Length: 111
Image (cartoon, rainbow, N blue to C red):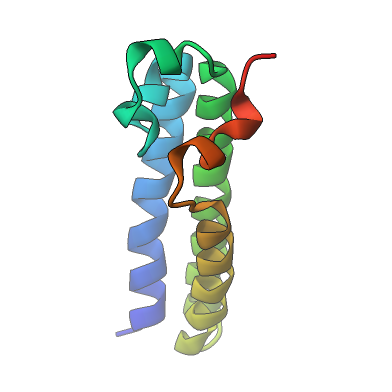
């Protein structure tokens, strides 16, 4: 049993599905972004919801691709090839995390 293949493969599926949902619902999906949904309606109107949804979609597809590559390398190589996939994913994920909601979405302000 190749644990690296299964873990990366299982994680690639929800990332891809979430990316597809953000692609289908476009700016309506922005309300599902953590932190943005806690803003009031007046504050949400100040932000470009389409750009938020597009960036979330792109992030999810990139994360799915990273996990898919990790799964394939683990399947055709050795199980621990999943570790670099998780390190790369972790770096990219935590680069996007911000504890301050306004700071996290300031690049999406409508000017």
